[in-house]
Length: 194
Image (tube, rainbow, N blue to C red; front, side, top):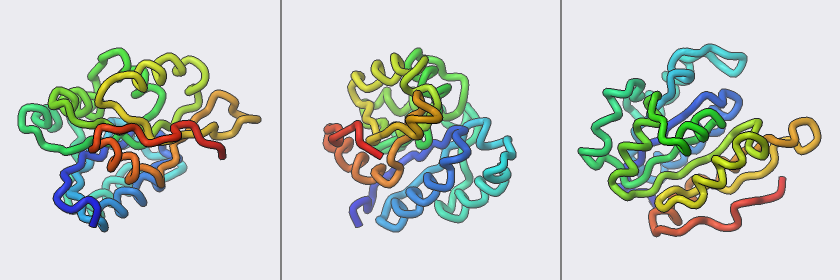
């Protein structure tokens, strides 16, 4: 039980194609003893897509964690003052959320959760999933990778031929990344082949 007694916030943003992978990781963390609090972006909270309806994802989170997902800025703001988590994970983290986080914008529950958590100088783990990680968002990825207390899940190009700027994290490596981050270390290597 590697995560026994660990309190972990798990925040999901709107890369709907990777939500199922994130759910599998949440289940694994729970199975290994983690106390998971789910946090969802407005997109995950409200948007029905070809990958599933919003209510389906929220229902899965409730079933796996036994908790109602936090879905508003006022619900997540106490994360900081109450020092709620040992670690906060954003997975998947879209390019939009990545850019806002890098520029200090806190206009969603996930971004406010990150800001509130970071004030306690505890690890924030990011698992990117973006079509522009090697394009417009490359500078934001570089900036965040150099900030203390922010750790990246190893990632790769999603589809180098059809989507040459696209990056996606190896979601299955989230648990190992969290363990290293809780020791103040970045898991290596960060860039991995397909």
